[in-house]
Length: 110
Image (cartoon, rainbow, N blue to C red; front, top):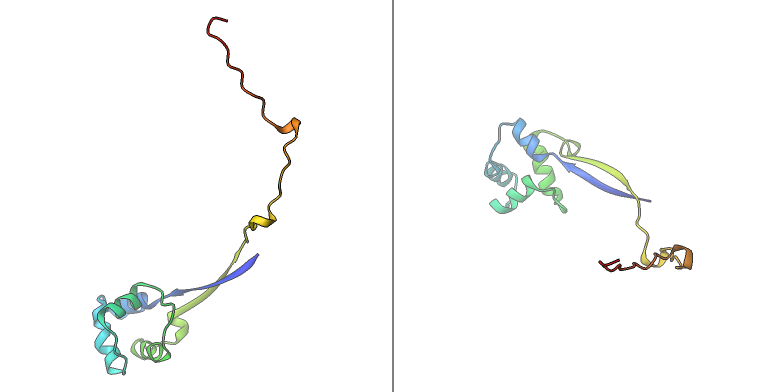
């Protein structure tokens, strides 16, 4: 078993709590704080979980919404059961007692 780390991204909920319904509303607020992102980048930032996020952008978002990074990012972990690798599979030897019986075809006349 392994632990997989992940997080929930709450930017969309914070925007809604501040009556911001369009992703483009965020562009001038970020620009005022020295973060220049295109409308496509802001759209992906709001709608998807970012895999990489600059500290400058994170700090700007915290300043815009008067929050901490903990309000934006909710980390969690989950336990994942590791599947067996091909080399770890148990090979069953087919012996006479576990082999299926051969099918017999009967004539219609019989």
